[in-house]
Length: 143
Image (spheres, rainbow, N blue to C red):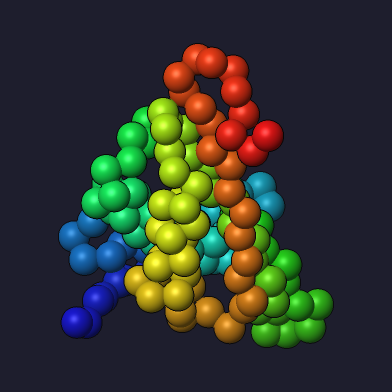
């Protein structure tokens, strides 16, 4: 399956990109910026890709996820090409009765099998996760 995108230079280090007929995204590598830098977009792409996988797997496992976010950070090499050498993903799932085993399996499937963004990188990727109990009992499942 071929995917296509177009990038047009605006000025300085600012570009507008569009994939297919989707919405335009401003990419800006200079401060002050009008949009994320190219390397920030890489992190956002990885987060979006793995998030989609995890939510799909959790839905298939009939887990009651009511809120979800992925926090991502990346360490870059000091020398060019300044690629990501390490990426950390923190998955934060909120819901009632979420199974730790289901979360671990969903993340494993995403990182090892389904997430094409992670597979496209030359970086070591690790993760952590938190489950927030939305039942109102105030009990932290990690305790």
